[in-house]
Amino acid sequence: RPGDLRSLVAAWSAYRDCYHPEALRRAFARDLDFDLPKSKLHLVEHQLCHAASSFYTSPYEQADVLTKDQFGEVVSAAYLRGEGTRLTLRKTLPLPTSLGTLYAAVTTFLGFTHHSDEYKIMGLAPYGDPARFRDKLASLVELGRGGTYRTSPLVNNHRHLASLQKNGIAPETVELFERLFGPARLPNASLTDRDRELAAAIQELTERVIAHALEFFASGRSEQLCLAGGVFLNCSANGKLLAHGPYPRIHVQPAANDAGCALGAALYHYHHTLGRPRRTDRPFSVYLGPSFGDDRIEEALGEKRAELRWTRPEDLCAETARLLDAGEIVAWFQGAMEFGPRALGNRSILADPRVAGMKDRINACIKKRESFRPFAPSVTLERAADYFELYGRADSPYMLFAVPVRSRALPAVTHVNGTARVHTVSQEANPIYHRLLTAFGRRTGVPVLLNTSFNTSGEPIVCSPEDALKTFLRTELRYLAVGPFLVEKSSPGA
Image (cartoon, rainbow, N blue to C red; front, side, top):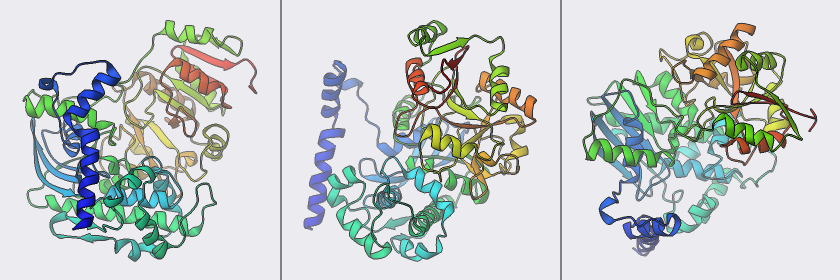
């Protein structure tokens, strides 16, 4: 058919320019000045990369593995089995079916940015009632037997591949959505009940489709489940699986989006292809990024001495806990940067979760972001179950499960639906951050902190000491704990 031919031509163009081995070798030579021998280039399919990134970082010897995102080469989802060092591909869902593209299309239709703001739709969803658009959205997804499904080709219209990649939504999809849901929202327009209700409906449908997909594993189901792909950065959906799903143990790779594919490709070749043994006796550490010594930090401080003053407290954690208890908001820069989109205690902005107005204060004065978006809590692993419903799970080390909050003492990190994206912190995983939480708990009785990423809206999370100082100086933050130093602005209003 003509439409299929156009899709093939568009797909081949993308493959030739992005995925073909010769294109990759040229990119290495152009960007890295590195001549990569053909014998050293091993291509791993996109969904296999996602699967490997989750299974090989899990503590499980065997597990069911499910991946979902917008699309890789020609596939949007994969069902696998992991055993030992091997991954066995059992089924894939080819394009145009794509749950991730459907979610991204709704994100774009509601005036947000695709490939970026899907988490905003997740945060907006609890403010709306899904009933109004439940049936209309459900008509775009056909649930099949054995955990399979198909999404409407009008939604995932890959004949308009260039428009889809640039704009997140094809022209025909806009027309369809406007017939079903009314006019598209313009970016930065005021949010309406319609917008909140559509967000609620796409979130509910996503959770339903994920639950349905797991029926594929019904026969011979494992006790363990590994998840990856951008869809599984959806903490609310992950939390529903934890609460109501058939798996007592679930692992989500912390960089579940495409960033994790680099990790997955390396692990797949090392374990699956080469058969090298795995380590399942220790948790995967997310602290894989750059770290900086005290000398580098002090040098960066020295360059800003006219605007800053700093000390080297004998007990940095105790002093920081004192400031937080006094109502201060403190930027926290320690150790190696986190791998993935979450700030997990090394590049964070911290505050007291007991103060009801703290969320609005940080949103308005520092993060400059939408008021409906929630903040996450960090809690010592030992006390996590006192404050959060973890459904028998021991921990949530990567901030990837939204679970009910048990305590009324945490209004600044409790979303409108009573949940929070909990981050549990062990002494083993992050000693200094665990000490800070413990010190705050010793002062207040609550070993929990509001934890948000150290950046402002639209900016990446800070990486270096220079990044940290630049962001610190252009916000209304007053204090920064960077390495062993406690920094304060020379002029508090600066």
